[in-house]
Image (cartoon, rainbow, N blue to C red; front, side, top):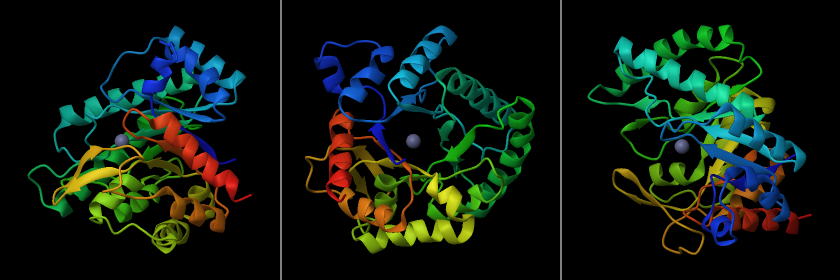
Length: 282
Ligand SMILES: [Zn+2]
């Protein structure tokens, strides 16, 4: 099924008097939402007890939980220390994900640093392929590693690079962040066809199943000539993209992604707006 939900806890969650993430699944279910991304982006500690409690609630209320790994991961960095820390961060995140009862681990692949794009991409491939045996040895073969399309030119992970990465191993499935993609395209992500072009590229290279199971991040994002500047809400009218053409493309292709809204503060309300548009088509 196509799932809709927020990243983290929205302003409204707290305004409704709730405090703990363990309360989120029921609150999301009451809103008609079916998905919840737990941000471990700043490397914060999540205890096994808390994660399992959230996971139990999620199961009870039909919420699929995904996690976003720490921002510090950088597979382009040539140093051994960096690669050891990538493995540590990802394996810890995957362990949290297991306790939460989910199988989608979203992460940022890396940054170009002072290298050429070719060097950065070559390091990315070598380092990532070196990491994979650790992933399998640790018993995470039922999990998906989901590299995300990035919003700044200095970051590695445009649409082609992420689709390429997802072709390296069966456990790698793409995360399309359309807010980011629109930043990289300088606002040119507009029509249903624009979204179809991206999904079809994925279907051509990765096949239907991986595209069907892809993860989506969606928000309007302000950008400059360097790319992403800041996340906005759906109230903003200066920056895109709009969600309607994305949903039109998804419905046309019959794919069933997990759609996470990353609006600033209004992520649950905005996720519901996407859901309502989707439901209005049926
Ligand atoms: Zn991200």
